Image (cartoon, rainbow, N blue to C red; front, side, top):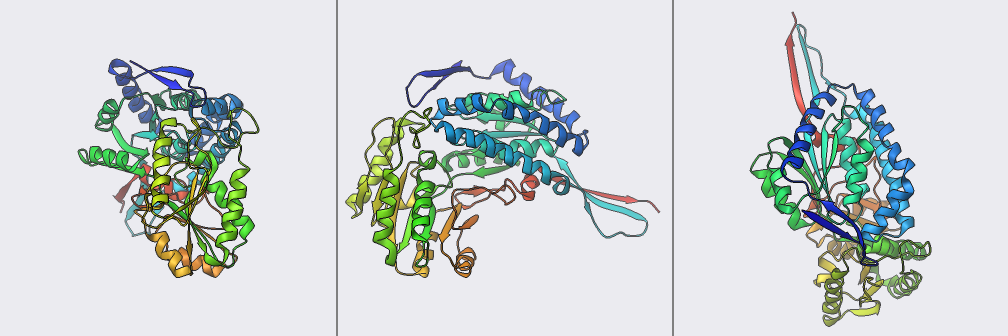
Length: 453
């Protein structure tokens, strides 16, 4: 059985990919189990060295890999090139953090006994990756899993299977062979792999419904899963904000990657003192974005990866307008694009302020105080990131202690620092990737208690 990958800009076929099933799938599962048994015996310093060498594939083939990303999901080529570089930086950070993060835990000595805690690998880790950041999403788990002594099965999105193949190619020269396999699977086969007793952990990035489905499946086996399920990330432009800086960055946070970012800005609250001026600046910055062929250097806004998503985006905007919002620009699809869209006076209870859009849309609402901003920012079933645009560090700290999100930014948005834990609350998911804590769910603790006296 084959699946077809279509270029969202031209509609042309990029590739056809053979699905893994039957013997082909079984062979990969068996090889991953055997490779992990050998890999766990390799010294951590040697693991780090081998993984670093394997990453040379992405360094040497950056242009081809970036181009494949663009062809598969429409990201402008310069953004795809930047994604390769960011992916490598994250991987190098995790390699640097591994020796301390994976070291044994020493506890106070007791005469006549040796006691310590080891962090041991789980086995085979299944990574189910989304298409919107096809390099960054897998690297958050693939490299830490390997460093921890696991092998990896990477089931990439059906929109971006060529990127999954790049991961397999990059790590194919690792010894032992079989540490990373790319899998092309139907939903039914994915469920079967999750339920395979040889899989020890699942890392999933995608929709809330998809996360719930994964969670139901792992419940049959009592294994764990990391779930990153997106967000409705708010920005607050405070009374003392640098307005020009905030407007430019919030618009970029809303429109980068055609707005298809789980941690992109999806709603903005602006202090009434700056409300009209912010809207004018935001509209100006949106007007400067250029849609077009994502392989052309001047393009700053590519097509939607799924052009049919335009209908849902239009509906969200139209419903908000019916509730009293003002459409200042955009709002209507010009397939395969959705234009940068600015919606003012957007009601707090509108779908546009409550549910993910996953498009270049910025709904804006005025507030009269920090307290009102905080209440509205927390009024969401999601909790991934939030940003506060202020010159006052104490104001940022005040919000940070009260916002129900995994990350709080001051004067920044839509960014992952690999030395900080990437996590969410509420329906943004469960578990942690990146930072020294990103290794915890990829290992288990083993207690050693020896009588030596």
